[in-house]
Image 1 (cartoon, rainbow, N blue to C red):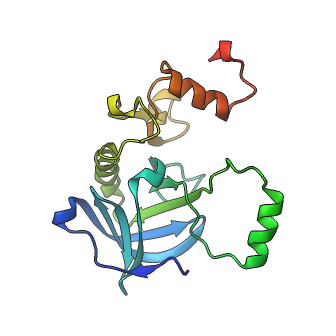
Image 2 (image 1 turned 90 degrees about the vertical axis):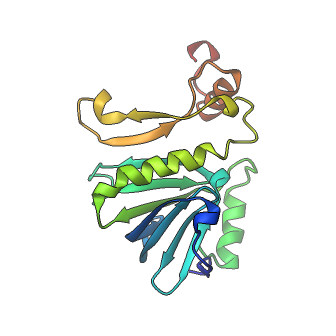
Length: 193
């Protein structure tokens, strides 16, 4: 994949919080290989054994979670949703896509899954992600300065039917959050929010 580049891994100067070797990276269902995941204050990076990899800037990360649902994916992993596109496309497919998708407000979404060989490392990986993500508040969200993040444990709230831990947005009591909800769910009346 052409977005894989050679670069030095983040170190202590970039606030390295977690280094997880033997971690498989999966992008939109396609395995990229096994390498080392670096969770630093400046960026989230993954490098394979040959030194090729990628970095994700925190402002592009819209959600991260620990997924333990083996029906959704066969192994427990750190799930990261990114507002960007990473896969190669031919000029024909870009043209076809542009014709089909004329809505300029739709952002591309990429889904990364980081699967450590040692699944007991998932909690430390999640905690490091939360700490680093909090250092990069959304500049478009005027309320994000007041938000430290909150964990929501789905398993504890649904009797164990699902098992996910994720960072959820601030409560819907703020006008900005209510506006995002209305945009995401146009069929819901404002009075129901």
